Structure formats: C-alpha cells, structure tokens
Length: 103
Image (spheres, rainbow, N blue to C red):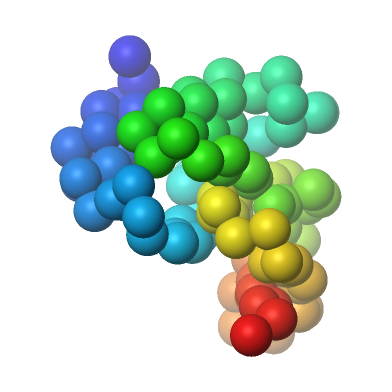
C-alpha cells in the first residue's frame, strides 16, 4: 500500500459518513496518466469510499491540471451535479480548480 493510500485511510476516510455528501479535492502530488478508470490511486479511493458509504464515488478531473501537462490535482465526490473547470493562474504552475454545484 502506498504512502498516499495509508494517509487517505487514516486521515480522510474517517470523516466520510454514510449519509454525508462530500467533495475531496486538491494536489495529490501523484501523476495520473491516461484513463482515470485504470489508475490505481483513483480506483483505490473510489472503491474505498463507495464501500464505506454504499454510494458511488467519482473522480471529476479529466485533463492536465498543471502547465507541464500533468494531472496532479484530483477531485472526488458523490454529488452527481458537481462539475469542475480550470482557471489559469499566473502565480502557480497548477491551474485553479473551480467546483460548481447546482443548489
């Protein structure tokens, strides 16, 4: 098990309850290459949360999140209406992630 998987289990998973809606996003500092459906980190997080909550968990980021064409930033949620977009930032090599919810 990787260091990030251990961290996720110890620090984040306890806060995700069966009835809660959640959004987990940020710089996971692990390159996601190719199809997110075949990525071991994405699969681990999606499956672990789905097992705990009995609700589908999806990773929303579908493209590069940095100026170097890498995908290091991820967003996981069980809110079906959630959408993300990116905003270029002059102060960082990462793009800002905007998250939209229909309320």
